[in-house]
Every structure is written in C-alpha cells, then in structure tokens.
Image (cartoon, rainbow, N blue to C red; front, side):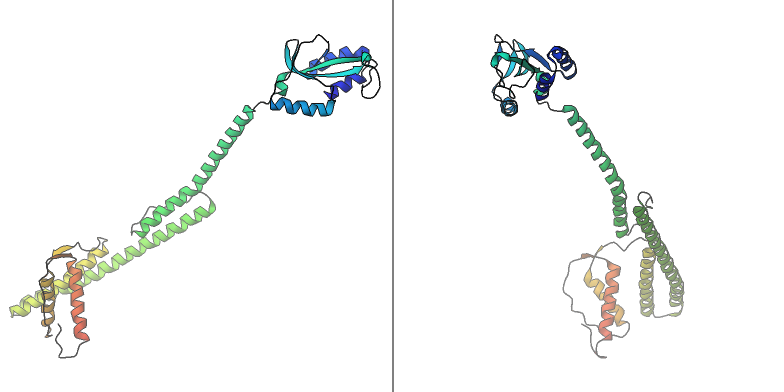
Length: 316
C-alpha cells in the first residue's frame, strides 16, 4: 500500500487514471475515490485482522481506516489521502479541503492464510518415495545377511546348507564367498572322516570273521567258545556303530533296559579274564538307556577299577 500511495503522490495528476488502470491490471490492486456516503463494513474481531491492523497503522499512520467491504464490495480495504498538488500530507501543511481520499482494495484471498495443500501433497509423496527407496536399500543389504544367518544355523546343527548367492555389495560378496568355502571345507572333512571310519571298520570286520570261524572250529570247550564269541559280537557291535556314524546315521536309539542284567554281563566278561568281581545289586526297574554306549562305559569302568587296584583286590 505504501508503494501504491507513493506512486500516486509522485505521478502527474493527469496521468493518475492510467496509473490506476495499470495497477489494477498488473497487481490486482484497485483504487476508488473515498466518499462520505460510502457504506463501510468494519473488519471482524479476528486475531489475524487485529494484528494486520496494528501493523499497518504503525506504518501508514493513525488516520488509516480499514474495512471488510465498501458499498457491498468484499475485499480488504484501506484508506489513504494525498493532496491536490500531488504532495504527501505528512510533508506539507495543506488543509483538509485540498486532500483527496482513496480506498485501496485487495482481494480477500490475498490476505487470507491458505494451507499450501499442494506443497503438503508433494512433501508427503516425496517422503513416501524416500521411505520406499530406503526400505529397498535396507532390504537389499539385509536379505543376504538373513540368508547367511540361516545357513550358519544349519551348519551349527550339523547340516550342509546350499551355496549362498555371491551378489550384492562387495563386502557381502566376500562374506558369502568365504562362507561357501568354509561350508565346502566342512563337507570335505566330513566325507574324508566317513571314508576313514568306514575303511577302518571294514578292515576290522575281516579278522573278526576269521576269529569267529576259528573259535567255532578250534575251541572245544563250549563255555570258552561262547565267551570268545561274546567278545567278538561286542567288537562287531562297536564296529557297526562306527559304520553308522561314518554314514551319518547318528547314534543308537534308547531302549528300555534292565540295568542289573547289563552290569552282570559286564562283570562276567571281566571274570573271564580271571579278575574277581563282587556284585551287590539292588532291584532296579528297567529304564531307557543307550545299551551299547552304556555297555562300553561299564566295561571301561570295571577295567579301570582293576587297573588302578591292588593285584588281589576284589572289585565291588
């Protein structure tokens, strides 16, 4: 408004009408002569208009009036005065009769606060796009890591996972390649171990078969022959466990077993070696055990007891 007023004051009075038309066409600013008969509607008691009025009065002077509509035409109206000679009323002492009052009208839309919905929409779309791109990047990085974690869990459980794809970032490619090499090395070690155990077990079974045949043909005492055959059967059972372990079949299944009978058989095997064993067993109900593993443990226990006892001691 100050610029409009200054332009009118400095313009030749003859050319003011042309200036008014130019301001109206270019800036949307309309100027009307103020009349005493104008029907003026005051600004509403809203905080926005109050702040606007106080600010404008401090810049335009206390004689400035504001209105919401003049003569039924809505807008933001403000008044100012210029003298008839084209000089500012604040810079000369002309009388009120020589002053010309004007109304400056701005469309109300220019003064109203509007929420920039289009900017909010663009901002929301940009944020959504940024989140989508971030999610794609994070997924691309974490997907190989999740696959690596699953494969490591399978290796920890004794299984051999399939090869990991060696793609993605350079560091992820190196990590996947190193894990694949480690998995291949573990598989190779398992194969070599299985081959070694299978070879040893197979080589041991051949002399056991000959021993069994010689025992049947050479030992006339049935008790001694049965004892030798029992030892051969125990050795053959141990070899069978090695073969099963080499094939990756795992250990034996638990069986409901009479522990006292198992202890008695272990003591009998030791007595055949002329070792004294004294048994004092109480009644025990059958329980689930791994019979072959427990039999080996009992044999080792009795043999160690004999080994570290005095020569004439009785193992109880």
